[in-house]
Length: 444
Image (cartoon, rainbow, N blue to C red):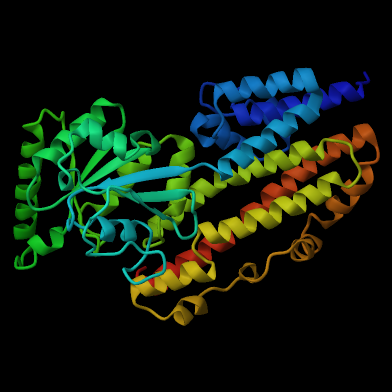
């Protein structure tokens, strides 16, 4: 029984749409049905299986899925492809704005620097110890991911504004969430501000700073735990006086970012964001633990999925040479981005060396990968020629001239090649990032 070219294209494009929208048929266990799995030619525990098990493994809403389907029905495969390309571009441009407020001297600048992996004297660092004289919020973009921006807001008590007036002047709607830095005493205006922010529907977090100073003269771990419990109980009780329901207070030190409640604070901030903003937030965090590197691996695996699917979909369009060129472009861009997100570019390594008190030369000495050099299309082509995909890539360029066979072959091999190569590159970069963290902080 023969099939038409249109039927082949429809089958390929529908598979691509299903992949994004997590609409593959699954059994009760959440696994892809055997006939579906066989049709994709991927292993049982491959990426399709992972995506089928959790809708949170993608960044695509049900509304997006309907648009993809509608675009294909009205504009054919080309229409669906353009929407996928736009979605990937949108993901790269997502913005995250974080408001940090509190009285002058409570440690806002040190906190903002710590969250971005900077010391006080580094380029782009927030000035520490500066007296507030203006009502203008001060932006401090992330040094590698400028779409992530921390805003230093003057304390509400500085100018004796009511909460409504203060939030209006601070451009309340700009921020994704607020962090109020507390000092030794919980101030009434900070508590009222937090209550107002919560009432207006945005997340508010209270962080009690400089906790290391409170524990300096306490020698035993038990004594430190009791003191921390005492401080936490006081802060929570004071906030409850202003009818803030179930307040959580994080005890932190911006000079000890791996200790006290600092790791819990970062985890909480991430988990309360939607999938897209959680993604960019986690990628922005400095690599100070092996766990952080592993979290980034998980996030970047999601990008591998999207880019491979996009590559496979473009490969299904029977235009001579399109698939091969697009694949290389995707690979070049992705490898450069992965290297940046994993803190392996020169600037990130220098910042980490500064924070860890190590020589950047020592950190670079443990990096053993050719992916640290200039990533160009020629470089990627050499990788392809040296891989098991070389024969497939060459055949694909020829078969793109043949409408039906080229479409089927291009869709399959484009996806597989991109997925395999990006996965290998990600694994190699993660291994090197882990070695850097171990060298910086002498941890196993």
